Image 1: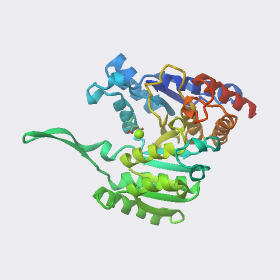
Image 2: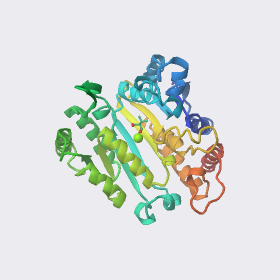
Image 3: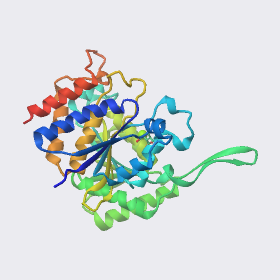
Image 4: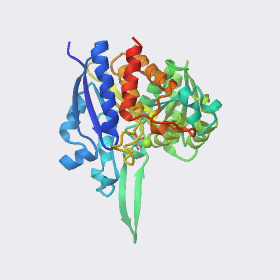
Length: 368
Ligand code: IPM
Ligand code: MG
């Protein structure tokens, strides 16, 4: 038996720092749980641009296609702000999502009890929160044609196109219904069917997939603006939210903040099953490259570590080990371990990125 392969793309900013802590966790699973991976590393984003003049080299793209799972840190930074749009660091990430056809982006928002007071919302609104946003990731306005900046008469016009086919909607809806069955069996679909034809189609197709294949799951529909409001008002009404690429981008940042810090949220981007039965998969923290704190040992590695937990669960069929890792994170937070982003108004002394990684590995060890 060969080990499953893992391609690590640490990327820019705090990416390499948080990924260093994930590597400690991976090392622990190898030595203590016999879970070994064939790991290779490569460049994505600004660092790839610096070396190759492109944010994602074709060789890296090929490696990602062949890997059992890809683990990504973060891309981007002010140094790259003035690059041509086609070679911006973000284009590397978008190319991975598109060419691997990672249509289903899982963004869980879970509020750890120890952090309930860090949310900008009241404790009772967020304590115990556990919702899953399923964001369509390979279509919609992010990729629709025509797009560009064109000249029309004596001025320019910027154009992007929101476009969804029935099959694109149906497949992400199925993935939301499947997840809901393993959770609290509720899906809320969000679009703007009141103003967008693509929203009307979205609603129809989600309803049809539900009626024909998942009648046991409770389905509701909401306009995405009302959904944003409800997420802030009473987020616990939701279990799984399924929505398009752009609304999912916005709603997931909003949901992230409910949990207290963007430094806590992992994500999984899943595609169709490969020949070995595993889905095409990329795991990444929801936070960005945070250039303002990069290189200072201040970053919170938890989102990236929890992204690896999602890899254990969704790519490697190691649900129990994923639970172990999530419990280890919960434990260190309950014991008071805090990186700088988790400093409440009462203050205290933050620990470094690397100390947080070590503390989590110690908690894993203590779980045996
Ligand atoms: C995200 C990010 C990306 C997106 C950027 C970095 C391209 O905001 O993953 O949510 O807009 O999808
Ligand atoms: Mg975003």
